[in-house]
Every structure is written in C-alpha cells, then in structure tokens.
Length: 177
Image (cartoon, rainbow, N blue to C red; front, side, top):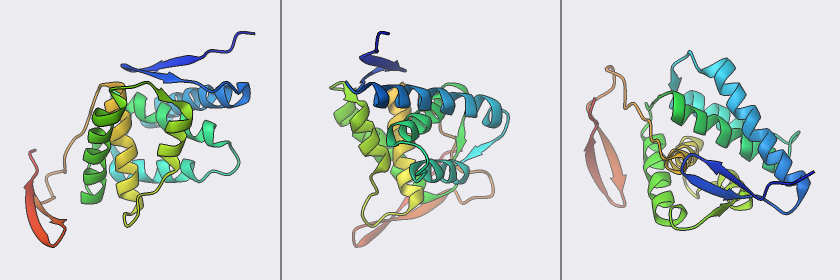
C-alpha cells in the first residue's frame, strides 16, 4: 500500500506525517468532517455559536487521536468554506476569525504546512481569550487555507457597530450588512 505524502485542501498543500497511523487518522478525520457537514449541517444556518461548540467538542475528544480530531475540524470547516456560510454574532469569534486569516496570509501562504503544525494550531488555546475567539481563529485560518472565505456578519437584530477594546482604548468597528 502506498502512503500519501501530501494532501491538497483548497489552494494549499499539507505535508502528511511519515507515521502511517497518523496520516490515515488525519485523512479519515478529514473525510468524517466533510461527511458530517454534508449530512447534518448543509441545510441549516451555521452560526459562530454552533461552530464554536462543534470545534470545542472535537478539540477535546479523547476517544480519537489528535490527528483524527484535527482532520475532522479541518474537513468540516473546509466543506463549510466551499458550500455554506457562517453567521457571526459574537465579537470574540469575529476577532479570532480576522486574526486567523491574517496569520495564514502571513505564514501559511508562504510555505507548505504539515499535519503536525495543523494539530498544534487546532489544539492550542490563546492566552486570555475564550473558546469563541479560539474557534474563530481556527475558522479564519482554515477558510484562508481553502482560499474561500465565507462570512455573514451579524443578523439584523444586532447593532451596526460593536465596541472593541484595543489595549487601554475602546474603538467602534462598523459591521456591514
């Protein structure tokens, strides 16, 4: 049996592990995440809250390997990027999303990423930020990785601008509908 060494996700190439078990766990996770989106998520409105819950649940799933869990999250998010939209209702998720996209454009677009690096990215928590920020970061990074950012900003019942704290000053950002 031939073990693949690279995998293409959107416009990016992922270097797979020399370890066969890790490689197949990552690939199986990608397929499971894709199928989960196609069966359960394709016809519903995805909000940042539901994405945060799904990402948190699979980040901390101790019944599977970190490679499977990372593959699942990336498979689900990359399918979301290709087939759907996400409605952002929380400022921390939006901030994490923007930071994740910028991080990919700074680092990831210049080099090939490894499955190990993606596992670290998915399992790492940002100091001082909540799970919504972390889920937004992973979502933004993955959407930039696939080359198809899809975001729907807040629904009509949310304000047109939200205060964001930048150090010791507060700034309002406008949200276009």
